[in-house]
Length: 361
Image (cartoon, rainbow, N blue to C red; front, side):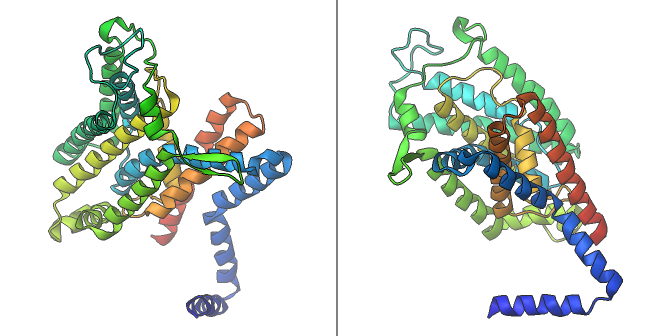
């Protein structure tokens, strides 16, 4: 009944429009959803050209890639809601991955970054995860402090912390004569706990790793934070109108600090998962990962105008972006060309987002 009533109202609204408004209605609808329409056409084309695109193993691969990308997108989404961004996200991700790999190396490996550490166990793995999340949160706290205290643009602040974090990464990879080389030989217990199979789908002959389950839990947690807590309401209030939020009694300084701190913790967790998934981390790990996260958020409806966005949209944006990248690989598109396509997607998504804002205004 609710659906019938909704569509009936939409039909009445449409019939009340004159001929010019009706044409504008369809034109605006097509333009506002142009990105989704083009992506749907591209996905259908890929499925027709390459039959393996919609195979069970391919679908599970897309789910796994999305689960790795989700934490960063969930973190950076809050920064965008505040009309900002976070250029340091990829480097924080890389630092967390490097720290995780170094602290959770196989103790029997010939080349260890830290020689006097406890044997890898469940408790030690959890402690390392918390450590890298705290490290990410501290960098996020620095970002939030300078943005909130000195009213600096997030672009400038996070550009600075991006460079600082990269310098820390380079020094970290020099520890104990490592010479900047990869940190590898992570403990099998670490891999099993994070990227090991959680359960198996016998009909598809595929396994679902633990980090997919963790991603689902994280999405539920972030949905609760965004929609059911005072912090979430304050975040949207500040993003919509900072001055109005101040008048309403919202602590803008604290809210901004908390958003960036939470984002940093998410980047740290994402790097922790990546270390377990890859088993070897380099100083370049995480390079440009913030671009994918920002693109996913914008595709999912998180507006740079501020105060607009939802967790469901971010999840959709991450999946759409992963589907496109997998499709490009299956079509044999040159990897260098994929950077151009990625940039075009970000530009198109931001342009359409700004167009909707100008139309409303």
